[in-house]
Length: 111
Image (cartoon, rainbow, N blue to C red; front, side):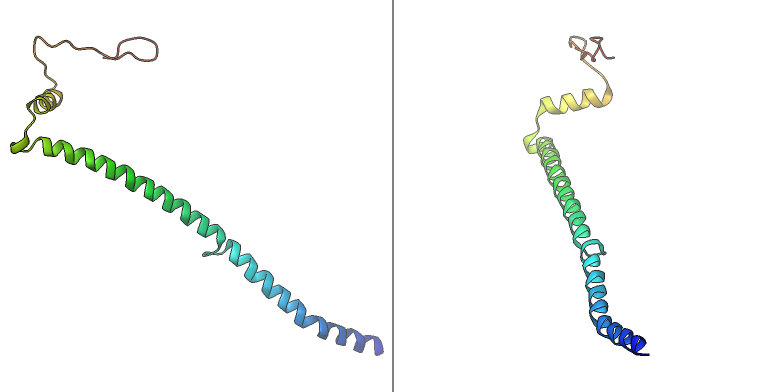
């Protein structure tokens, strides 16, 4: 019985540190891989950087569109821009216009 009692006493002394190590391992794992862990934080930072880049791109596009709208206001109407937009929208051209088609990669003119 001395061996069994010594084994129980050894396991009792080992139980506390073992449970503590398991708790530390559990929390360490979730700090890295949990829903709000380091990996999720890096993913959120990547998504944030993408959103900021998209916002900046849309802001620049909006500035261009606002500038073009300003040019179409009656007090600052640009006749050349209006004529260009009308021709492009309607697909028409003046009989004296010279049309140059860009070439594709093979050197053939694009229709």
